[in-house]
Figure 1 (cartoon, rainbow, N blue to C red):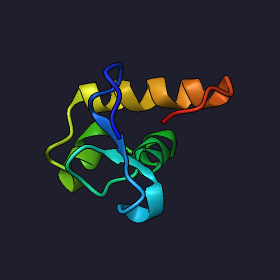
Figure 2 (cartoon, rainbow, N blue to C red):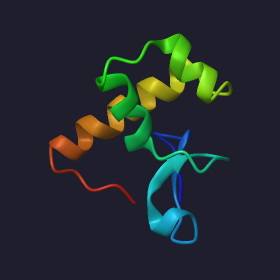
Figure 3 (cartoon, rainbow, N blue to C red):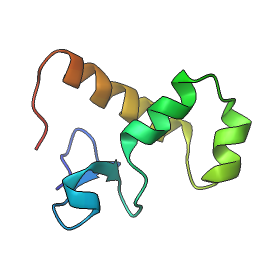
Length: 74
């Protein structure tokens, strides 16, 4: 399920057990955030997932912020 507010992020119980992933992929949002938080450069991240854009990073950070505030996500 995507939401109008975050069209790049998706949750489906049939994809990775319902993990929050990027639409059209099996890349968990948490994996991208962990890579960036570990200090990996944008160039290194894009080398692994060339379809990612800065919009994906922004959506992931918004999602993480909502999680920190205790807001649920569909």
